[in-house]
Image (cartoon, rainbow, N blue to C red; front, side, top):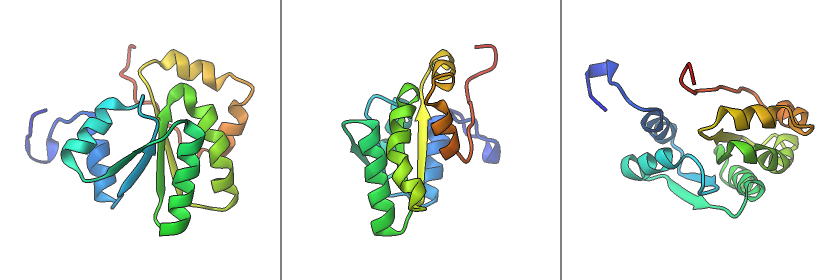
Amino acid sequence: MTTVGHNAKRVGAEVLADMLAGYGVTHVFMVPAVLRRTFAEMERRTKIARIHCHGEKSAAYMADGYARASGKPGICMAQVIGALNLAAGLRDAYLAHSPVIAMTGGRDPIAASVADRSPAASIRRSLWKSRRNTWPRGR
């Protein structure tokens, strides 16, 4: 995007990649089907290692193990519909008070809405500290 001093217009992927690098994140555990633009920016702009996992639950377990071993927050990412699988892996991190940050993303707000109404959504909500939708208005 364009650069105009501190008011630079940037896409969310650029901001997220720069933010993670700025906080000293060195590894991200993720399912490769998600947040493609973010990972492209992460590869282009930072030296953050992207660890591809077979599933969301294993990404959460790996982030938990990384957090416990390194003492730094473990970052795991999954697609929006995989958030329920991610929640299963986050339970142990939550109970152990491990510093794990989970991010989900996707293009379809309908999928997020369906996942929010599922019977397992209450489990996921109990693990969340914050939830933000970043879809453009009018979509």
